[in-house]
Image (cartoon, rainbow, N blue to C red; front, side):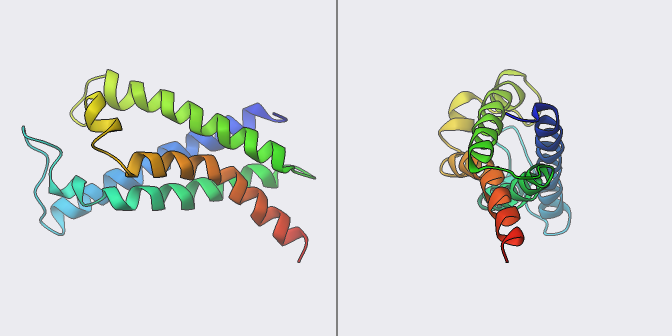
Length: 146
């Protein structure tokens, strides 16, 4: 990996933004669309209705931030994009385990709730995160060759 520091900067900024977008979408559903909020039985309708949108937030935002990262290179390579995508997806998988399963908070889930019941969305999210730098590379490559 050619520039680990910049890769981590773009990854964490994007991760934070994706998380905020998901929270704001849930809040919008509850307060504007009057969907049921979280209760003792689950995350609530307001959150549940956002799930199909989660991969979309991720592919758009991680592709944008992948492009920003790749844009920092004079001549980025597909190998750099693949390594970055694998690193970003790997970090996200481990961080999500701690941030959404192990560390308990009002929005945390158990292992089954996060990795089984959240299917196919969580798998699509991780694929989108892996693909983000690759899409970013392709966008930079296409722009430079048009």
